[in-house]
Image (cartoon, rainbow, N blue to C red; front, side):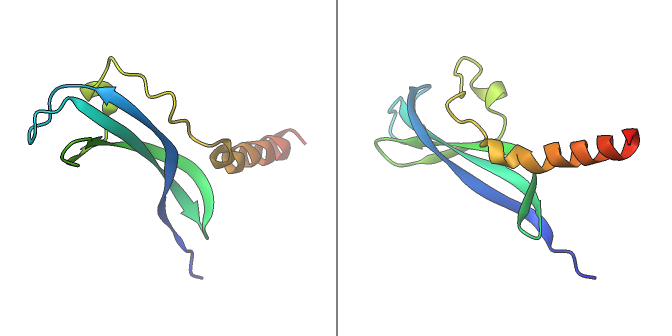
Length: 105
């Protein structure tokens, strides 16, 4: 039996403008932050969210910086605007309900 599984990404559409340390290329201090949510899937059905990856793009020279651990690199900025969609949590919630139903019934 073949089980198709893997990791997919979801582009979180909101983007915010932040000011941080100057860019190494052009010394501009304004960046646009975008986020991608990674999640595990089986047969292209989302199982659970995995991690968020943030991309900072310089406004002037378009240099892209990738941040996997934004709390370590940018602790003063809150990226609450980049929320994980609730439909990524539906399958784990249903799985827990079925397990609890199987145990108690």
